[in-house]
Image 1 (cartoon, one colour):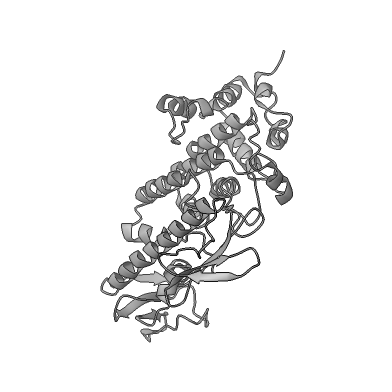
Image 2 (image 1 turned 90 degrees about the vertical axis):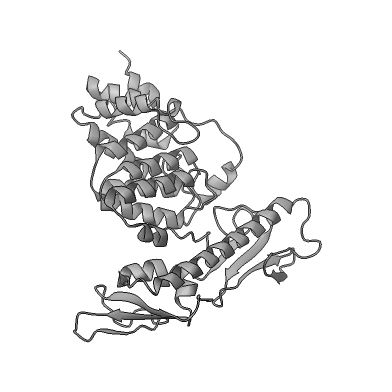
Length: 379
């Protein structure tokens, strides 16, 4: 007698082959669960919303003995290597870009497994596996992976359902790394709000932990270019570098065919003759991107200026992560207009904090506060 679950697995898919032995010879209850999860893409629409009846049925089937284990195993294997598509080799992925190959028949099962992971509970390792699946399929890694918005969106959704601080921490990190240009990024934002509300995270903490970095590296630059050059998540028909300077100014260096750069500031017009028909869309998009960076800088100037009268304090690691080292907020945090100070448990009270000092022996238990703001920080 044939195993109906076997029909969901794709012999040409790496993930299917990794889970095949565990998904063979299942109990009737677990087989029903897997077959149901294999229908996920029929009940999960293009807006990344889960059908209510499908969700209810999934939760009922997850009560079967061993259901949580098999779901967590499948998610762990999705996080392994090249994830679902088995592609962690840059040349392989680049060759396949734009080919539009039909999805594997196992893809619906992968989506279902990810969605179900949000309802089985689990420890921090499950949250970490979901986050890694999301990063690999949302092109938020330091090498090329085959992008799959359905899989990353399902992982974002599951993390929003998963209870506990571990999932929240993974969501904060994903917001930092995942480009807003990815379609399921809106699902990530929704999951963050949902998880934060469940844990009682104050609105001001959500605001400071979700400041977009717009793809900027730690040094405040974003390099864009065609496949293999610049940011992995952006294949632009031009070469350019966007920079947020220590002064708070944003510039765009437009680079021509011979490598000569022409720098412009807001509104970031390209040099005369640079906007050829082949480059037009990329030029327009890059200008809008630089303008969005400026808008975020302006909003952060106002937010940081308002902090001076609030009397809030931050643990040293949190302040470093969300303020000093953020590629946008950090420029303003280090501004001479802001005076920061810190306190350690030695009874000596607060002392001035030099934001240029990387550590200086400050313990992780130290608390940081904004002493004063002479005027909105300019960078």
